[in-house]
Image 1: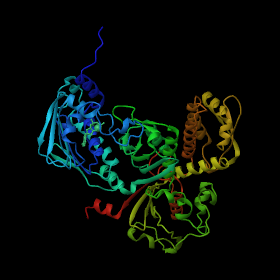
Image 2: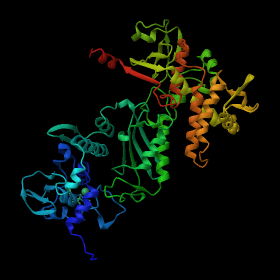
Image 3: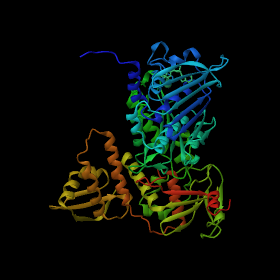
Length: 607
Ligand SMILES: Nc1ncnc2c1ncn2[C@@H]1O[C@H](COP(=O)(O)OP(=O)(O)O)[C@@H](O)[C@H]1O
Ligand SMILES: [Mg+2]
């Protein structure tokens, strides 16, 4: 056996396998180079999904003619200072991309530095460098990659259709564009401009890239934890997707695909999103360069954090805090989040009572409505009449009741009608039309109230007038009796009453008069899965508890199909505004929908 070094060309081909496995990877490397070169404008041309032709043009610093052969040589880079692999500020640093591309495709670079009289060009074909020669070209660099993998037919076979390859390229460009809103991007697909992004604010860039997301659906984030800084935008829970494609994570200006961060986003949304649905989230994490290792994989999208737990805690905490807002608003400044439910938006003055609703809820004023001395702002008068007529003029149609006008307007507006005994129709002062699913909303309010009671003093119980004896299946019986003490913490008092019979003595007061049997069967089902649960797993204990509280909330006595009077409807709207996470039900479905007058006009082709 003879050991010999591989030829440079073979080494490059091997690297090409790792660094540029498809057109999107070439696009990524070339755009990263343009960004590293300080470009303010980047244009990308793709033909046939990038398989036939990729061209990236930038107005960055350019490459000196004498450096061109080095640029396409392996392990040659202008970016690592004194071979310091810790303080890496640039997107590239391995000096692998251009030689790998040159080994696998036809590569041409035309570049001109400021001081040069003309541009210079260099080509590489199948690993062979063709010496630099003068060429016509603007300041900056133009890289053309043609016939990708012509030198690696086996790999070419693995490419998907042009459409699939194009979509991957587009996704990479979106990520890079979002991470650099201070750079303008143009994307031309088969000769047609499909993306044209001027230099813009971070938020405008996100909205331009995710064209299906609206301004008011984004919640701004801005939190610190020691050296870590997290900022960005996340979507209101009702704006969600079937994949994580709407999630973009940028660490120290580098778009990354990091499982730790991805998991943290999931946990952050757990209380408000259905399983299998993913939010839109664009998170920017800044941390000292020595706290993160980017040299984990040739593609440089994977990371290793020195303190993974701190990153996770920051992301989860920031998301949960930002989502703990009442219904009706998505976009609020983080600073106002803490005061929002109690002072700023406190819609109900102590003088206004909603006795019918509270009795039915089985709660007193204190649970949902914190008494405040006075609300800022003046009050306005609402007149009589609850009908579908003249909805536009709603505010003048309510009975002579005084609602307190708060400093901010009420996001969910005032109820004008109930339809199908299920939905509340409301109108806001800003000519918006709101529909609320009363059952979904009520379920979330109950869930949050149960959670709050559980965390504060334990769930309040209400003894049954006559304890109820219920027979269960053997499995359910064992499960329920096994969790007897935990159930007591949840406000459910049970005791054994024979072989398979359980005597129910008390139920949570919040749930009103419900069927003890169906609640307990439901809980037995929920608890059954938890028996194997590891007690050490804090994360899962919280998930379980929340799932159990959500199940209990499903059993509240108010369901769809109940007529609500106007006071009750408005009370529900105000409580939704004041209750964290009330924008979605416990299963992650939205509790309310809103249309502006403009939206309505569009529907009727009036605009
Ligand atoms: N668009 C560009 N503008 C200016 N210089 C570039 C550009 N693309 C590549 N270069 C130069 O070529 C070198 C090699 O590029 P590359 O193979 O991607 O490795 P790396 O980016 O890791 O340094 C870079 O270090 C840089 O000096
Ligand atoms: Mg590079």
